[in-house]
Amino acid sequence: MELTVEELRQRGWIVLECLSGSRAYGLDTPTSDTDLKGVFILPEAEFYGLDYVPQVQNATNDEVYYELR
Image (cartoon, rainbow, N blue to C red; front, side, top):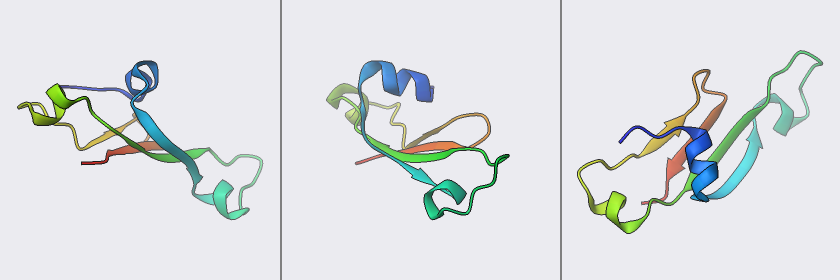
């Protein structure tokens, strides 16, 4: 199963989301990007299936979400 960050949001599977990187530490500059980290929970069918997804990230790795397990 190939999931995207947008799909996690649309399905309501994200249970924790927070800022990370320079913005979280107050070290950002006007050109800094926004880094997000978080946790999501897969539904039972996906969790126990053959397509378990431990991590989902966007193309630039600025947003990374981990499955709670």
